[in-house]
Image 1 (cartoon, rainbow, N blue to C red):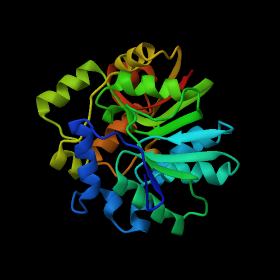
Image 2: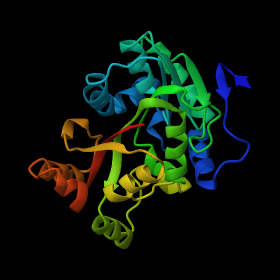
Image 3: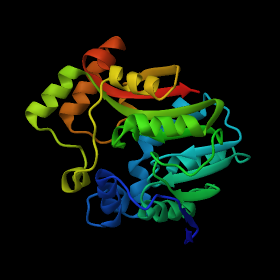
Length: 265
């Protein structure tokens, strides 16, 4: 079914935590920054957009069919389409309301994706070996079953195809204990209101999940640059400032940091 130019491809039944994410998108009072006016919402993503341009667009030559997962406003799809207009870009999110918002970006950005679609990453209707690239931003820790989601992504990728995820959250076991002990909630108001899936995973847990899903070539890098961070509290900003002086293995394995993940089929 197609609704307002959006292909509705989510299965009839979704995980409870996934449904909560959909509700947060449907509720204009949820606290999501994406519900602000279009320009303000887009400006809030500017640090992520700069990171995506440097980490992904400057290093990969995209071709063929590309799928953005958990795109929300799907700003990454717009950036890819602008730089690689010959590609077929599929912009997806589990929430229809998110994609309606994504469509509105066409009034601010010059290029737009070829296809908008609602999609549950854990149950995709596409055939095997369909996409050349799958990409997303801070999406994997939202999946109710990470291995199932990664297995589906790998199935859809062509041989030598790549999954690229930026700004994924990786917390060491020590940090996971501290977060639980201190009862730290997710950064967004919508996380606290709706109980959106926010899994705490270490880098080792991520690598194990990728291996179980069939990926054998997985590279991970810390994202320590302050200019790529949203507007964090001063304490968090100070933490990331301290990380810049440390070797990469410290934030990745001993403490906690956002990471970039590139996995090849």
